[in-house]
Amino acid sequence: MQKKIGILTSGGDCPGLNAVIRAVVNHATLNYNWQVLGIPYATKGLLSAKAIPLKIHSLNLRGIDPLLNMGGTILGSINKGDTLNQIEQILAGYRTLALDALIGIGGDGSLAILNQLRIAGNWQFIGIPKTIDNDVAITEHVVGFDTAVNTIVEALNRLTFTAASHDRVMIVEVMGRSAGHLALHAGIAGGADVILIPEIPYTIKGICAHLQELRHNCDRKFAIIVVAEGAQIADDSAHTSCSRPSCGMGQYIADELRSCSHDQLDIRTSVLGHIQRGGIPSALDRLIATAFGKTAVDLLANGETGKMVAWQSGRVEAVSLTEVLAHSPLRVASHHYLVETARALGIYMGL
Ligand code: F6P
Image 1 (cartoon, rainbow, N blue to C red):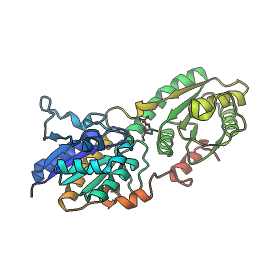
Image 2 (image 1 turned 45 degrees about the horizontal axis):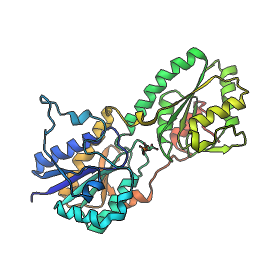
Image 3 (image 1 turned 90 degrees about the horizontal axis):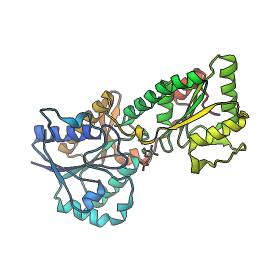
Image 4 (image 1 turned 90 degrees about the vertical axis):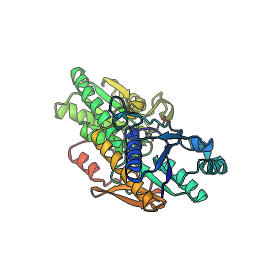
């Protein structure tokens, strides 16, 4: 039976979303002869029953399909759940579009909203996990994380040389919300001396002592500190002028370290911000995106619903969306093998 399926991207954008769209359109068109509609701006598009027909190779430029390596999302996205108080209108929009099924690409917040709508509207729905935060449970990979890690590592490579030239402490604040996967992976791969993540509280005194040790006993006069935006301080008795929420975690630590070292440390702070979300997807993200998109279409063809595609032991499997959501957002366990690896290499990670 010829199906008419919708596809949408929801939540914060990340590299690899367009590669998922490309895989879904190509596989659904070439192998099933289905019609694919792109829903603009996630649930907002459903609300107003808007859709863009997506055709195989529709974006060809001299035979090149730019979707494979284009950052962002051609469908647009929203990262607020404020359409949720209009559930009935969203369900009505879905009916107006006469969709047989929907594929939603999102992080844990978006997938939770879409799952709620799926149940309310009895939709045939498959989720595809994406997020630079890497905090979706029950999958070993999500779309977007690898590129973000590489972007941070590239920044750390650059900052290392300027830090070394001036014997400076470079503090690099990275994203990740309440999870430290991004800081942990990029910090290890980028050669950081200190990695601070939300799951493991740190002390200013501990960081200060570590920097002194590096300077005086290890002949490393500069230092790289990678701090997650949601890092947690264990003991904030050494407050300076800047209160944490208003100035950002990187700036807060810079002020505290200046005070703790009696202005002996020359410190600079970089907040990488949305640079981490942009850019061309890495080879790994393109691969994950393509395999996820292909499998999501096959699951719809098999009549599956309420599932999320997940990377498990080198292949893509279908897992229960409800189970994924029960365990998300996934945080870094304190005994995570990468935490142990970092500690074994002498990286300060807090208490
Ligand atoms: O969830 C992805 C993410 O980039 C987080 O790491 C970050 O805290 C947040 O989104 C930023 O959201 P916004 O784009 O709304 O500033």
